[in-house]
Length: 460
Picture 1 (tube, helix red, strand yellow):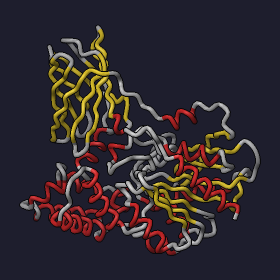
Picture 2 (spheres, rainbow, N blue to C red):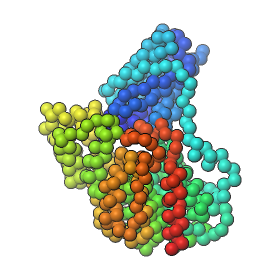
Picture 3 (tube, rainbow, N blue to C red):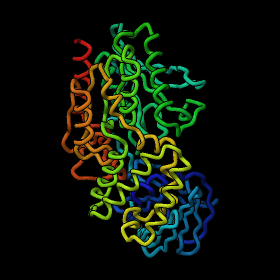
C-alpha cells in the first residue's frame, strides 16, 4: 500500500463539524495540491459569519465533496482540524490571495499552498443523464432479502414492457459498498443497471453488510460470507414472477468477480452465466505483488531487484500464514529484520510497518491475498465473460485474463486499451487518486459489450 493510497483511505474516514473564528477575510473556496506520490487536490470551502465559521472540504480527485471539519482563524492564520483516527490538520498563513501552509496526517506532513478559487464541482455526466431521465423504459423497486440473519436492502430494476425477464445480480468490489457501488463520487452500478434494464434484463443491486439501508453484519467481512449474500440475492430473484428463473446470473466487479466465480463453481445448477469485471485470475500472492509494482509505476517510481525481493517475501508471509495473529507476528519480525535495509522505506512509501500490519490483518484484505481462484475457475461450466482494462493498477490486465482463459477455456475474454480498474478512459498509469478526477464513470463501450454478450448468451 503506497502513501497515496494510505492518505486516500484516511481522508475519506474523517467526520465531525464545528467552528470558531476571528481575523481576516478567508471567505470562499481555496484549492491546492499535495504530493503523495501522485498529486491530490484539497479544497476548503469557507464562510465566515457573525456566529463563527462554516467550513467543509473536498477531495475532488477521490470524488469526495462536502466533508466536515472544524476551523479557527487568528489574524492571518488559518487552522483546520479534521478530528478522526488518525487526526488530520492544516495550518496556513494568508498572504494576499494565497494560503501557504502544511497538511498533516498520520505523522506525515505535506506542503499545501492554496489559492482562492471557485468551488470544484462534482461532475458525473453519465449519472446526471440517468437521474434526469423521467421516461426510463423500466421501473425501480425497493426490495429486501435475507441471509445469515441479515435483512439486505436493494433496488430491483424491471423493464416496463414484457415479462419472464433474464436477470442479473450486481456484486460489488472490496470494501463496504452500497447498491450503486459508489466510490470516488462515481456510481458504476447505477450505469450497469440502467444499461441492462433498457435491454430487457431484471437487475438487482444491494447494499452490502452494514452499509446503507442494510442494517447488521460486518461491513469488513471476507469473501466467503459475501458470496453467500450474493447467492441469497440470486435466489430471491428466482422467486420473482417477472423473472425467468432459468436465466439468472452474476455481474461482479473486482472482488465481486471473484465472488461470481466462487458461486458459479459451487452452485453450477443455479448460476446461468457470470461476468467478471476486473476480477482476479491468479493467486492472491501474485495479485498483490503485481499490484504493488503497478502502484510504483503509477507513481513514476522504479521498482528494482531489492524492492522485488521485499515484495515477494512480504506477500509470501501473507499468502501462506492463514492464522491472523501468527501472520501479524511474522510480519512484525520481518520488518524488524529489515530495519537497516534502505529499500524498506521505499517499499512502505512513508507508511509505518504497524500501519501495514494493521491493514493486512483486516479479514476483507487478508482473504483476497490468500485466495487462489484456480480450482474454482476450473469448475466454472456456465458461460463466462471476463474483461479488464490495460491501465488497471489493482488487478493487472494481462496476467489475470490469461489465468482466467487458462482455466476456463470456454470463457470470452477481452482487454480494453486505455481503461483503468473502474473501466474509465484514461491516458496513463494512475492509482486510485485519479478515479474521482475523471468525469466518466464507465466506458460506454464496456456497457455496450457487457449488455450484448448477456443478450447473446440468453438467446443461446
